[in-house]
Length: 236
Image (cartoon, rainbow, N blue to C red; front, side):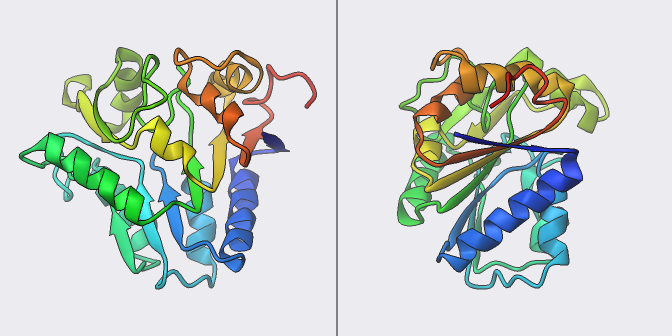
């Protein structure tokens, strides 16, 4: 696990973008993408670049259950607004949060991942150590699944909704086993509130109580952190 320290989120986005350029030059065709505030600087770098994605495929980590694609807090909307409208891909895959049969949707998404092995996966990390919506206690063997979101995650996401009651209580998430099959994983974290999770992810025991700790077992993980997110780390 390689740790890259940056001054701020903007620099972190630039570093991640340069890693993406290298991966694409080496033949990467499928990107695993994340939503939320963490990758925004990275997406801005991508949009401002001259990189061509028309031969690329994207697979997103997750989507809320119960939100239409047109809802301004759906992850489908987020991705179109922050990336896809400006940079068309050959194919974009996100779970369907309005699927009438969630079990069938989960199986179908596993099929998508199997057919399009992920070359370059972007991750954030939750304050409780979740990756995607794989909350503490999630089996490392889990593939795509429906998640009951923990109170801490609902609280963290409530800033994006009119009220806490409007925050979806479930999501469809790529599983930890699926994430671990990615060729390269780039995890970004910015801010003091992520410091403890970063410390435990890198130096703590590998445990399902902190899902991101499993990344210690992956042979190509790059962690991009600002000074605050790295503040509980010893010199690495």
